[in-house]
Image 1 (cartoon, rainbow, N blue to C red):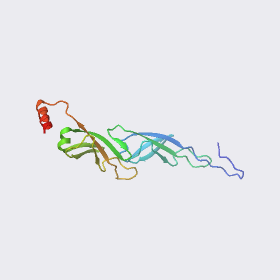
Image 2 (spheres, rainbow, N blue to C red):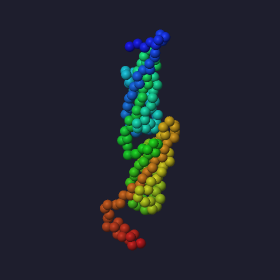
Image 3 (cartoon, rainbow, N blue to C red):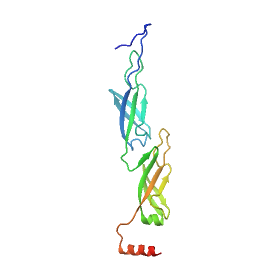
Image 4 (cartoon, one colour):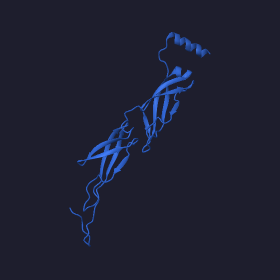
Length: 181
């Protein structure tokens, strides 16, 4: 109904109802700042989604809720982000974690490998004698830091040694010679 009247004849204003909505996105969607149009209560709302938004994070859009009563202000719209990670990366804030298989020969002798980053690939030097489970840090190759344009977390790559399953007779012979040394 209308606004309630006080003893002096003034109308009491009530703020409109706040609305809540979930917005489902993928991890790739929130890697870069982008615009989306949402329809809430029959109205189209243009929204800029900043890079680096986290799963479960809620933002408020002032004045996009229900109409006020008695001339009161509109309510607010609260959007909760639901981020699905369908990538091989694990995310912790702005840092990313990735497992990478490393062949035995490169681990023993050293060399260079190409690893996936979130937006491409990077060459990584592997020192000779690299142990299984070693983690290599790639600075600035992680996820965007929320509301800090151009700033990125780190990518941590954990190396997992692949032991050759089928060896030729020559390879077995060479490994036997190495063992004797």
